[in-house]
Length: 193
Image (cartoon, rainbow, N blue to C red):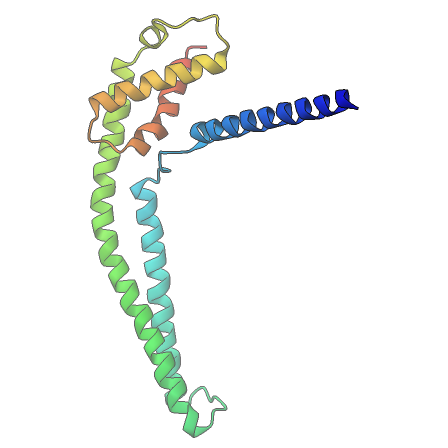
């Protein structure tokens, strides 16, 4: 009976140790999976989204106001009680006016985004041109154990590309650098195969 108590206690201690090790492993996994770099969206894409939204809001607002004028002129009759018709007309008129104002404001915002998008496109082209000239396969493979699996080599090479880009383009957005690291890697290694 005493042997069983010892083994139960020993088993409980082993289980506690395993749970503690599991907790440590789980916490350390979160360190690796935490994405600290925000996703990158090109400003030219954002510009297209803004102009599309602005056009839609303006179109809905204008069509809505025209519809209200047709209702007020009794060209399109709506079966509304006269005591509630003014409420319908004023609320819908307000909503359509808000749509028109929002569309105009969005177009004004789109102008600034367009300017920023042109600057970003120039920066991206400059970054890609600089990388084509200054980042070579030999430079990236320098100091690496080329007998490692291709996956490990990829991460080591990508880190070198990111470091070079961040050093040369200090004011560039980190998400932009991460986005174009893959393209630069493919230009170097996929084209040489």
